[in-house]
Length: 116
Length: 112
Image (tube, rainbow over all chains, first blue to last red):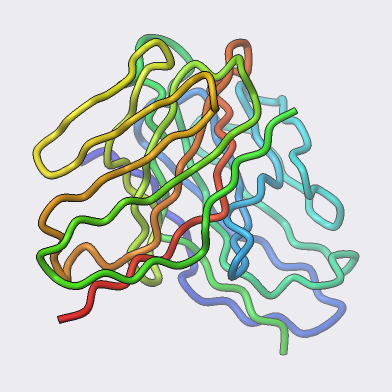
């Protein structure tokens, strides 16, 4: 079955460490996205990529980095520069072409990152 | 610019109708969506409406769009305890490459 997979489900980070969150999709989608979710603030876009080897900053990119070396994969690194990284992180993917059924965003199950 | 707002909480009794509201600011929205998020999980698409439509009905769900006021609503008829979740509205805009802007989410609590 096609889908989008995030790992790990829970992640603990010590202050000053970088950590990488994995996101893989087998939907043949061109576009992939990373969102951060905090209570009462909805989803805020961190980075997105519409094509391999290209990505753009979202609304809250500071302290994060991404890569898009393969169409299927869009890992997110939370660096030590991110001052408040504890949050729920969601990865999504969409097709870029076609009607509304192709604009549906498919989401992973999320990674909960906690700084200890 | 893009800004999507929702009220944070809604509480209803089982069997009643729920109405979740959303306002957006970008008049070039192409599609507007409603997503549902259950605890500790990702989001799942419930329904969508094209920006030139006023209403869409899908079983227990009714979406109303007032483009003049930039107001979107989701009505859930005969609300059940399984409908308890966070509901997000989202918009995609022309030329935005399918990038979605999400609202703040409305936590729906269904009481017996």
